[in-house]
Length: 125
Image 1 (cartoon, helix red, strand yellow):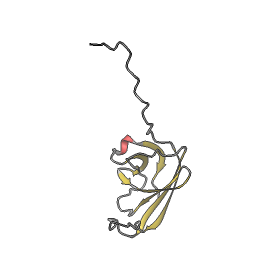
Image 2: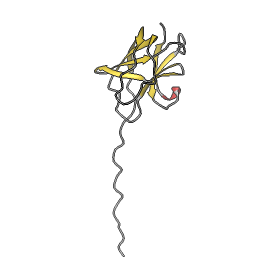
Image 3: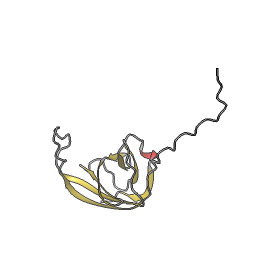
Image 4: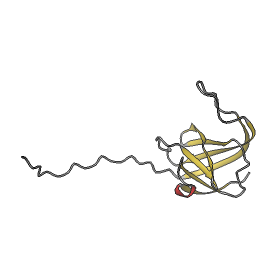
């Protein structure tokens, strides 16, 4: 019988999934065409009542299994694409649930709105 008198190996460093600070948001009315999917029918419908949020961050949003979400008040906006370095386009397919002057926050899909990175920006269209 042997006894290991050594010390425990340190755990590997954990990935940093903290969200970067939002430095600018531009908001405008737009139309929405759902992405063309090869193997599935899209669940979202085309809309002429959409809202586009161009979000600039001070650093990239980390890549992870959970996608980023932009919360407008408590309404999640999950349709997102990266359009430039540290610049993301979020699309709300309809504006019916977006409330004027609602606080905007950046978070992760599945989190509560208040768990995300709060911003100084408000929804004004």
